[in-house]
Length: 190
Ligand code: AP5
Ligand code: MG
Image 1 (cartoon, rainbow, N blue to C red):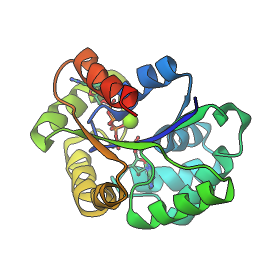
Image 2 (image 1 turned 90 degrees about the horizontal axis):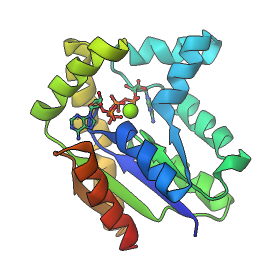
Image 3 (image 1 turned 30 degrees about the horizontal axis):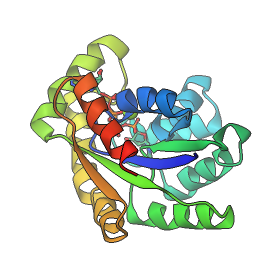
Image 4 (image 1 turned 180 degrees about the horizontal axis):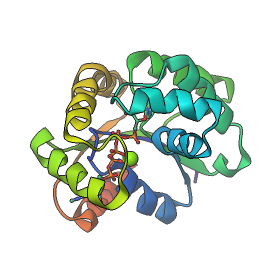
């Protein structure tokens, strides 16, 4: 059975952490726009430089650039069994762009999982991660900006998917294993 899902939640909610195990268990592939941008930034190519100029401030990379990157990624063969979109779509216009990408391929999203975690919970998680990974956007100021962007711009997509009947909310507080079990329950109920 193929599975196509979207994982949404604030910075530090555990999207990436949960995506890894969930993809392994379901034999699908994680597509993280943040990871893709960071890979380009590391390679220091044109797209990477452009993306980094936004990400370093906690701002969204322009839709045109992001949508094109996702559209190209969706052409690759490894996604035939399904995929998990981590960090995309991130605003209502990206939802529309994704709708078109899926329509032209005759596929659709099975479920949208929102990881629910408060701002107070995610800030220490990200400050802790900063010590280990040194992501340039894991400073207190940029974390605050990313949270504001999330609430203003990204959270509205949750309502769009709720209206479509695709939304499942999962409590993102607890151990990684506890959260994973909650997500697995949602998947097995589909
Ligand atoms: P992106 O990489 O998507 O960052 P983000 O949304 O800010 O989310 P994070 O990756 O920081 O958090 P996460 O939810 O994955 O949590 P994680 O599992 O790592 O985007 C970065 C930037 O790229 C954006 O700001 C933007 O500039 C650009 N971008 C990306 N997508 C875009 C788009 N669609 N449009 C435009 N621009 C885009 O966990 C965090 C930490 O918490 C880890 O250390 C982890 O070990 C720990 N942790 C995880 N789970 C738990 C738990 N249950 N309990 C305790 N700690 C936990
Ligand atoms: Mg992530």
